[in-house]
Length: 247
Image 1 (tube, rainbow, N blue to C red):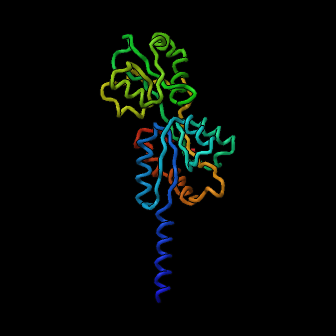
Image 2: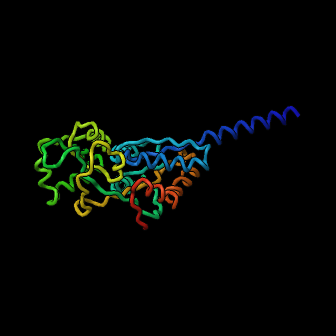
Image 3: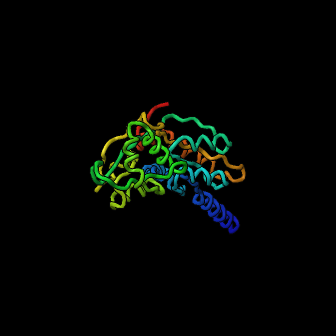
């Protein structure tokens, strides 16, 4: 009888550890922070025992981390190019997508555009917003604006530095994603940037290919990817101002 009880307690303890020890890691573009937090909150309502670790950063930096072997299960980028680069290297699993997540750009300032001031831009080739911004400013529609501000342009790390710089009046003008409108207090939208002046702003997400020995939570990864591809996920993205286009 004693052995049976001990065996039962040990079995229960091992089961408890295996259930409560489950965790996965998601890497996400910083511009998706608010929506990712909501997605995880909703997912955990039915999966309370799963620990989800999230690493935020610029899309280019996240891609390099995966290329260097970082143990990441799912990645969300602010563009599709970084995901495509990983796909070509065989580092992302080929999965079906049911919809596109899209965004647009706004030119923001804390004073009228006819006044001289400092323009803050994200670094191109590292941050997708920097690439989209430079494409737009190189277009003939906005080239004159950039030429007038070029001498007083500063390069910042990411979109949050643009937003904070505008709100703290450290910079006078900047380009942000339209989904950041709700965070503007002191600064305001001077104009929306035409979508035909830059590449389509399409977010992308995928499952990182893992060695079999490292892929301990593949069932959980499958479930989360399925959730990210669901109608509930679509509605959450829309709630935060993203556009959804069915594939």
